[in-house]
Length: 458
Image (cartoon, rainbow, N blue to C red; front, side, top):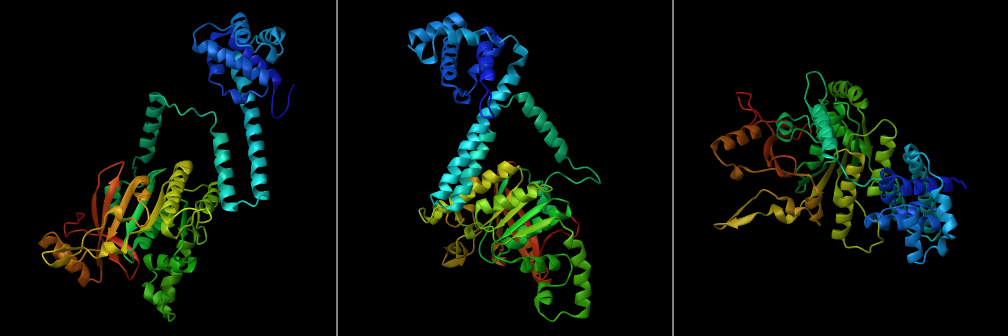
């Protein structure tokens, strides 16, 4: 008996071969019993697996004996059913082909059941965002049902060698990693890799949005396909900052409403190149599911290499108010981390730090500013736990300079209209923690590496 949702012949063949061939027995014992459609086949499968586990030997006689002893022989229709199945399998070489048929039929049944439950949830008026996320999880589970999670050392070594080869920097060839375009940053981190969940934290108005935009634009200039989810700025505000960063004038000139003829020339020279960048915005994707939909639209139409989210505290979690905000942020963070793993691309997530952290501490009767830490991420410690890399942006003042050399650099930057910015790598699962000191050009909305007169990175 055959159907799109079950195949009696294939099920009988694999059970028969399991009772006859030791090499086929292992495949059947690894089979999920629910993958067999017919109840009598599930019972015979139970007998085979139990006997195999007990090292009792598996053939027609031992299976029949187990069914009789456990009072299950009548339930399957008697000895003639077992004998009929036993008389089937003659081609052990076809075992994998039969198993594939059984797997596919089971997958169709699972998908049909999930679709039915999805419709029932919609008809019952359940939250549409929750329902969509539930359906995505169901389909992912069905897709991975045959994945037992085992990876041999040989497979791991081959995959690692291949990844190292892809990551290797070669002259005139783009790296496989996502670079910020800031030399001192890229030397420190080596670029972002697939599946990494990267958090960028900063106190309010420090420049985290521009830092993320710098990553996005430079990644796009490397030919990477990038999605920027901005819940703070619209597409015009973002693009104005891109124009300024690429030499189209200062942001104030661009947004003044009184652009000179020379200013229009500069803007025109920049607009052409940036308009061809593989960079997409979304200013409405305020849930993980909406970001997933945007990402998969790009994934299915050319691919996607990087997602940046500005910023996580502005996102919403499904749940109709049943969770507190800390629980919601934790759920959102987990969802984005899983999406990075699912798409095998890095995701940059911006997070606001608590304003209280700006006050510093009282030392000898004087309030001293302090560098932020990732534990200050507002409303959730889950971001700290989930992140592969956690970077913090800090705009130090002169009192925080550690020596006279730093103070001189700080003053020189200030004289040039630039601001010192420290990037604190507070967590890095794939490398060292540390600091990178950059210059922030607020007029042109860009970060610049700091070099000494010897041209060595500061």
